[in-house]
Length: 171
Image 1 (tube, helix red, strand yellow):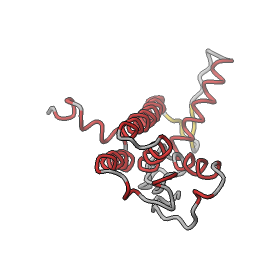
Image 2 (tube, helix red, strand yellow):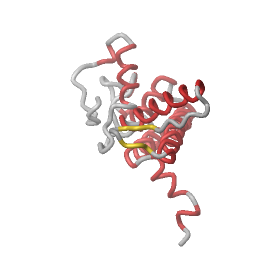
Image 3 (cartoon, one colour):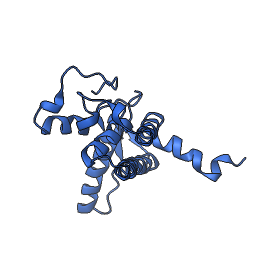
Image 4 (spheres, rainbow, N blue to C red):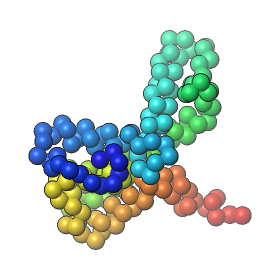
């Protein structure tokens, strides 16, 4: 699942629900920074965790200057803020596309897991689009919504959304 090949060797739809949901959650954060998998990726997750630690320390010591370090290097605040913005857009993308699939009549579990699986480029979701099924049963509109989700995950959300701003197209 984490390899983003879409290949599964077991029907995890038959397992207790914790396992497939856990794998779905992990697909959001297990991809390496340079991989073709979508999602938040490991570096952003690490940076988010370090940012949370820093905020906790700042609550106790509000005047402290606490830089975020990863690999011995100080991460500029601008990078930390852009990662926070990315994670916000990531969850907004999942929410909007899940609602779009819900509007087409797909049940909640299939809609949510299909979007998460598509954004993360992991392959199967849960239910109809799970390991024992596939995306063939989706309507054309549902397939297009999952395709948009896949492109947003593969090409990175910022890279795609910036194409729809007027500032990008000005000289």
